[in-house]
Image (spheres, rainbow, N blue to C red):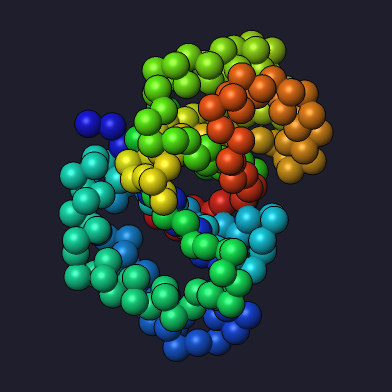
Length: 211
């Protein structure tokens, strides 16, 4: 079974660092790192929203991921996290999903900057046709990789989001400046993919390893 990469993003309250729930979460750190089937973890603050946190967990299998989801420790984690999440803006919604990426996420996470993208597609999307279009785009872009590109991976998320299927991508870059400089040329080549959906969430994070 492939590894499962769990991605969770939350907008934090302005005073999150000072709340009791934050101290309790930090105290849970050793238990969280010792969860069965957890291979590695990372944390970072997206450049676009520094007052937010992004957590990445890599699980050895979908079974290990599902077992964690139903554990008492996960219930505790959700409860403490909810006390820190800023819900003042109804348009800013926390995100959580899990993806069996085509390549190990660890290689991407090691890059100085990671771009994470989620493409939201109709529930009845032809997955094979979409992937064929996506693969063509990859060939056109990375046959001659843009300056600063390190490595990339992609895959279908396990969960739908508001009835939409989610195709996730992750790519590593040498710097945020090089990623942004490459943006124009890359965006033009995604026209074929945009025929399937133009609902895309993209952000960039510098991760540090926590396990």
